[in-house]
Image 1 (cartoon, rainbow, N blue to C red):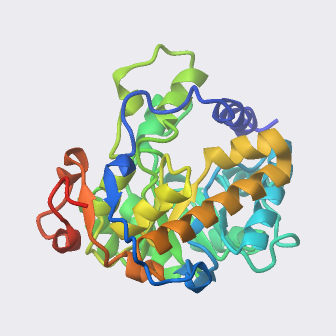
Image 2: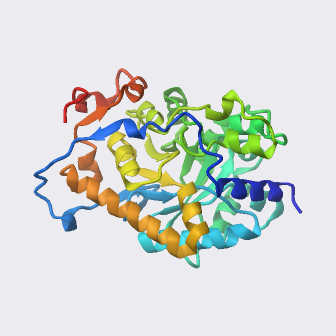
Length: 355
């Protein structure tokens, strides 16, 4: 059995529980207050929550975020989640495709027969991408029918993982090469620790248009690897930039941002949209819902999230996501501390306590 198969099985087992959550740090989305409009002058049927991501129109600004692939259990999980994405008109992302690259296993990576039109996002680590040719990655993307390739950055997770990478040189050059040469969009994402403004600037300079925050406050992958290694919880468990902070850090850079990291409800998604994200990504709650009730459970969660996004749009007097992104906001002090001086959000803020 390939070395990464037991590791991926461990990841699934641990993420099916709540013991891998951040312990003290939140994603700070609770510090985003949207101003209620008691006279919205809208019918719910007029609300349009659609958005565009990687050149595809989504019926709602939601992505079933990266979780798994490469083992037998991933086959049922990914096919069911991809089918839900197809039915609901939302996005779906594979977990790391390293097993497909290294061993050729297709378990969990072939979903186009159940999701022919859905936005499907591939996924490879930047260290693995560095050591692969663009042609090899292009073949992987084509084999899995991906509309775009997520390149994940995960130095904190790797440093804790006993068998993890230790050399992270050449990452930006690799991303620049893929942006130039890969025939599909490239999305750069973190793995639970968020993206800063400095990283966002560097990515934009080499041609990146899409990023995924994967911020602190949801699943701690440092925590996952600590548990796998049977280490005592350390101070790095809560390391990272909170999801909402990462979204505001990336504002105004010309990037299209997917907010993932502790996002679990439609209200969370709407708060991220109000900060400037184009979509919200949800991972572990979908795994929990699937574990409880299979495809039906995942579909019910997707429906509830989408309905909540639509409700928030109406209750802020917004027909569209773009209108929500022009509405006034109140930010709590911990999130406001992350706001760049030149943030486009500053013109929309009302004084704390004003509703």
